[in-house]
Amino acid sequence: MDCAFKAISDLDKELKFKDTEVCLTNDDKIVIKYDGREDRFDLSELKGAYVEDGVGIGKLILVKKVVRRLRRFTSPRGLLMTLGNWPF
Image (cartoon, rainbow, N blue to C red; front, side, top):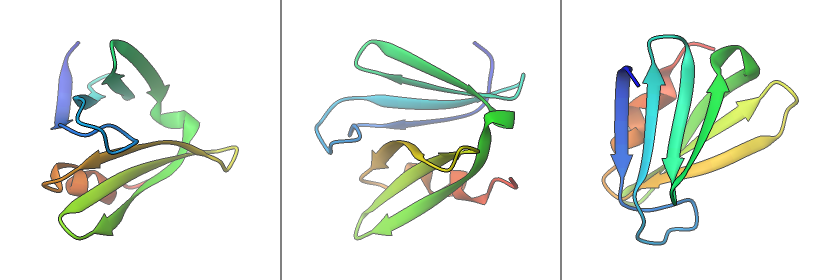
């Protein structure tokens, strides 16, 4: 998998210590790896993405065009903060 941008967190969506990897590929997909699983989304499926800020933590929220939350990704160091600036 060829990533144009990759962010790695040591917390999962439930704030447990498990690695989560988010990759923006060169073929316009977002790939999320967690718990030995892999989810793939075309950027065209997404309405947008934003970051919910907290104290020492940032949550990346991906919103599908059907207007529902897909999944939360967290990072205690705010590694995913830069993902909130994608132009959707």
